[in-house]
Image 1 (cartoon, rainbow, N blue to C red):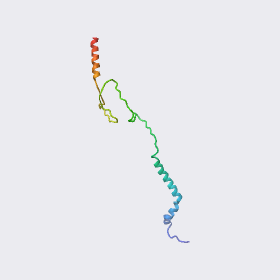
Image 2 (cartoon, one colour):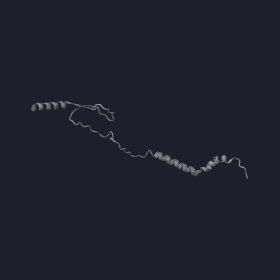
Image 3 (cartoon, rainbow, N blue to C red):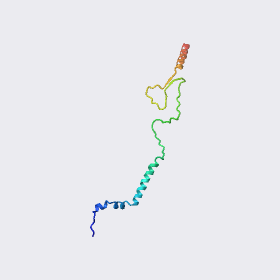
Image 4 (spheres, rainbow, N blue to C red):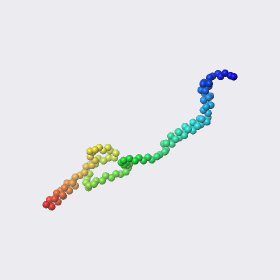
Length: 116
């Protein structure tokens, strides 16, 4: 019997053994897996999913018109309404004319006087 030149531990860590263990078949499988992951990551940019979230309140796009209606027939003197503006408690958003209030008050006073 021939005596081995190198011990078994060194022979197991050589390039020849590594190439034998990782044959062409293994590298093809590795390449296929790597390419499929790469294609999967790239295809994520083309996939579109609609997400719907339910929560308390209502979200609307800026293009939807929101009509602000005055409950009384008064003239608006000042308005401070802007899209996406931060509103704090106590901010004045609308100032309405009180001409009609003065006229209504005068009419009621005259009716009271006439009834007496």
